[in-house]
Image 1 (cartoon, one colour):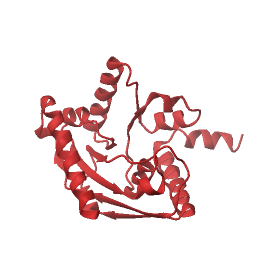
Image 2 (cartoon, one colour):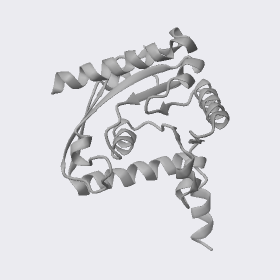
Image 3 (cartoon, helix red, strand yellow):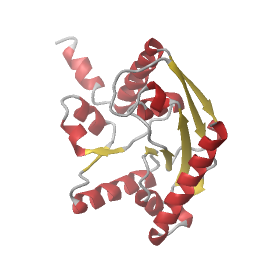
Length: 201
């Protein structure tokens, strides 16, 4: 049909899907009365081969980051999400990677795919998972999210109006850590985020 063919083409275009997603999230934030304040945007720098690692407080975290940063992030997501009709297709087209955390072999393969995607210059949004960043020699940008838990507490899907503050922190070079150092890298990232959140408390 005149509508169906162009729509099918658009749904296979990652660039179009990212724009539509960002537009839709923006409308949802406006309608819910949510304001997002971003600090430290200069710490993103060159967005090739970077991993933004935020603290995880609610279902609102990823949409806020996706809209606020304006970067076409990819992510590693639970395989169950890829089974949702339409959404699963969109995530695959966008280059998201599915992971089955109950299967160690598949989980390892998913991290390898993420590392390869990073080496190709893609950027990822990952709620702390450090192996792929180390293997790809990525820059990690810790991100301190404040206010999301109050606007949408974990386990709830109804949003309250309010302000979310996103602070992008000075990046770390994951290439300076070995696989054996992954726990130290995790600790360094979490310490920076905790310190930034404490400053705002």
